[in-house]
Length: 286
Image 1 (cartoon, helix red, strand yellow):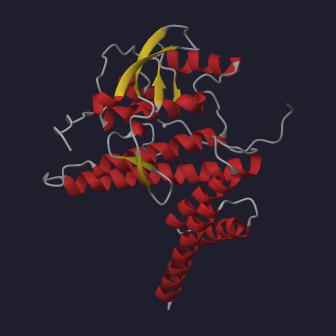
Image 2 (cartoon, one colour):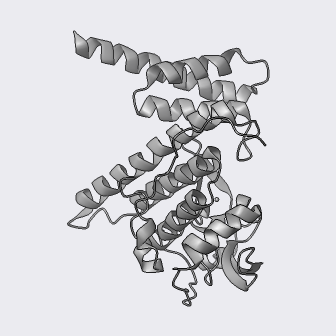
Image 3 (cartoon, one colour):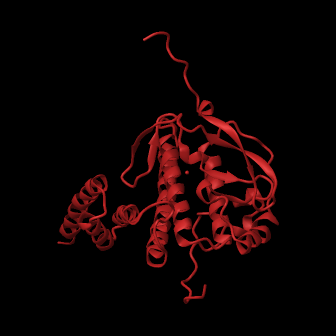
């Protein structure tokens, strides 16, 4: 699984670092103008929210972004949200410090009995309880939480869409980390290259997962409608030169009666980029 889960050893879960993200498909079965205003720090947008773990039933606090305090500054081509005040992606993981259960906030309460059993046996049994409370999460700390979340998703045999969504948001987090590197550091280029490589690995796994989910799951998927998922797949497929896949799905959005004007505008942008990339690729072959 490359290095997607590297670093889990600090939680006592080094044996899970090489788990396969997606299982081989099985046959059908039953069944994140006066005085100058005071400068706001990242911690000023956060508060401690209390959660009860559905695995060990213990209460704990996690840093959470105050609703309505941050404003969306824009989005990347693949819909990664960007905020000026704080990167919300760093705080979208809820992790129990007692037993190691971790999940994106969207999925935290939704567990079946078999899934809980798997987590207790494969995560909680070896997990090293975490006691240090943080005022803010660094990108590296947030990344560790995302990797633990991915490990939980694999262990509980989550749907491909959930694992793909975790990979997508992890890639977004890595992109944020790369943007916040010290460009004057002597090893900046080396750090940036490493982060870009890791981002690509997570994006590629997100692409695989969403393609699989599109064939086996119904919509909405991770809170997204079909148009949004198809758009995301198209952008990722274009990144990895899977132009046929990208073109097919983007064309579907452009001819869809249900796709809203904003999404169609985004799709037209991708279509233009695709045409240009295909021409460049064909020219390079000559």
